[in-house]
Length: 471
Image (cartoon, rainbow, N blue to C red; front, side):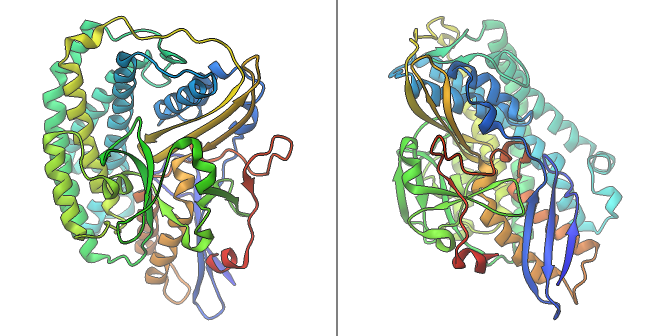
């Protein structure tokens, strides 16, 4: 057996590689995306006060610290028995989450993914497929991306206290409100940001439709994401899973995730591999992220985003959109929606009010918090003693939710691009394009690798004949 390796995969967050296993007859046996980093956050969160979780877990990643900050504080509140927090605090947390998604979606589509579309259209040399090459040929697009990132970062700093690692979400609410000067500054930037987001969505539409026709995809899966009364939700709501036909497979609250989701560990990756417990490893594969959220959603915030959602739904008809490159379009539609949502909130002068926190008492308990990160559903689960010290922690991050699906997508592309056991530059690019569509964040995804028998963690090393076949 021969191994074809692409290492490292370029233009992703973190260090990973693709390994394609080719048998002696030149046939593809399997393809794997392998995470090469190990960080172990689930272990060193233990024996720390639970109110520190929002601060510590935000350091998991400098790309998407905000979702970790908010999922952690929601889990901490559940563990400490906090039943209500001020409505204004919830609005501020949603604003903070919007800011994180705006900067992240702009970063990924314009700087990491868009060079793929340029390459696909014009067959440029490999050295041109980078931010530097993009800036030479598309300077206006790069500058617009910088502005969108600036808006998201400015919003995150105004609400979260810092441009990268937020500190303001605390058990019981927020440590401080947003001030009037920041509100005015953001409103002054909003129209320009919305204009650029619309232009980005148009680019994504053209690219997605073109690539979907050129590269048909047969792999299909279930989808999972937060939904609130049918609306695309990011901060709160129930977790919904739909099947390949678009019918609801299951609907549950974050507290019950262990009933529905099982986590397995593979030999060749530091990332965990979740699947739907009742369906098993083979049939329980699902995807999360922008494409999943829009496939599940019946509605979305924002007038312009609502029109884009209708166009998105038309691409696949009555069934969920399954094409891998639709992730890019969905990401840009969400970018528009986040900006429209921000405008709705900031136009209300009451957003600068002072009632942002409810006092919280130390207590023993167990809690789960879930939010939608840019890449998909993020789950934090903690158990603490009566001193508020964490004794158990489990994190399921979006990149690991997608692990099985990502490998399946890679296997499908490998069948197309590997010829006579060889992989040329164009084939390498196609394999990397498949990875970048999922936008994996490997800093987030590398947490635990063995079961914690002492504290009864739900991580299991699953090795069934069914799973061996999938490998």
